[in-house]
Amino acid sequence: MLTHADFFAGLGVFSLAARELLIDTQVLCEWNDFCQTTLRKNFPHIPIHDDIANFNPFPYDGAFDIITAGVPCPPFSRQGQRLTTTDDRNRFPDFLRVIAGCRPRWVIVENVPGLLDAPSEPGGKPGSFFGNLLWQFSQVGYVGEWLVFSAASFGLPHYRERLFIVAYPHSTKFSHQPTPWTEQIGSETQRIRANSTWRGSKSRVAGNHVWLADGVFIPFGVNKGDTTTRRRREALGNTICLEAAKTALKRVLYLNSISSEKS
Image (cartoon, rainbow, N blue to C red; front, side, top):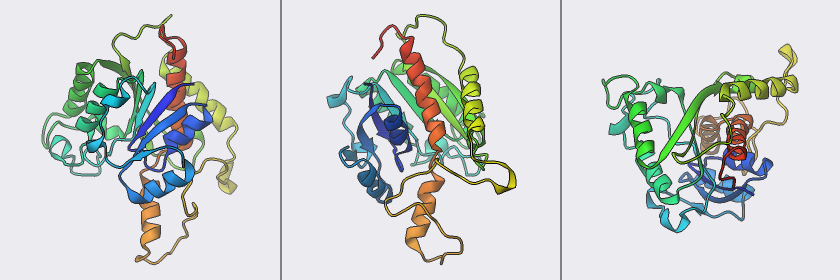
């Protein structure tokens, strides 16, 4: 069984997807106390580290086959100021430090598509941050591939695009040329949409949901002073859909299956 660590875990969607795919999540890292409460309820036996900045990766050298991370996106969002390297919320340096120390076989990063064209600094060249990020990955020994897809591709009633990066060590060798991810995801989304319960104006959601410690229902028209509801909405707003997480993990499972160093 492949082992997994989930950084910037949020509500634990990557860990839930890993569970469904028989991947063993061993460590969670999440600073938000509301999300931590949900993680403790749904993954009670998995230790939670509260801040990646204080995470010591060296005791975990080689311990994880897969590391996933929903790295905070505000520094790169097209809806924000895009302060990137000058933004205190840019956590890629911490994440790269963890990757260098843990040396996982596979890495999955989730972020907004704006990461692709974000400048290295405000007013800088579009895309320069992402180019530098790829260089930094190469400096710790990793290469990779990336793809943008939306929740709507999986039959959900909202577009919401997300960028997924799959990285692996330079030394990784495959028994044959991997099938392009675009082809795989096309087949996967067709299968999911064919089985979707969304049908026209009377459609409804079934099956794809996020577990919250105190329930997932968020009523409309709640009082603006309702702190719990605001925190629920904030947590859900930062969450990816389960099928997207599973699709990224399935890409890793496929690549691992044709790798010369199968885990």
